[in-house]
Amino acid sequence: MTNYTNMLRMNEKVCEEKRILAIDTIRRMVRDNEQITICELTKQTGLSRSFFYKNAVVNMELNAALKAQQGKILSSKRDKKLNEALKETVKLQKDEIEKLRMEKSRLTFEIKRLKNEQQNDLDYSLIEKL
Image (cartoon, rainbow, N blue to C red; front, side, top):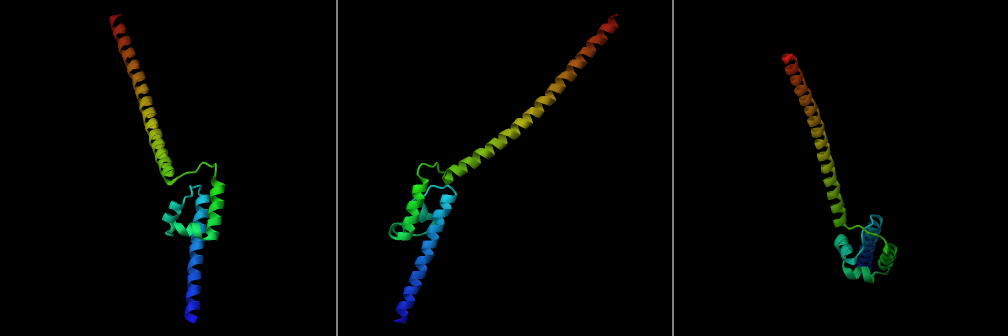
């Protein structure tokens, strides 16, 4: 009889750990504004699909989270990666713009210098003719 009760206690402890894992994962996904799906929950927790449907406490938490997410614009991991890639692209483009501005400034200065030099040469030639 004690083996049976010990087995029941261990089983209950494992079930409680699974519930905590599932509920924590659901709450984290809500907090991070990730789209909650059973498929994604099974990937992140390693629990079976049926666990999320059959466990009453987890199912209530899941349904509440799904209702809270209705109508919201959610971000997926793919969207986050694309956003980070776009930010990196924008940063690189800003750096390139800055380099081009520096080059433009340098070339503008060079043009002015050459025009002044050309004007000076013209002035010297006029002076020599006189």
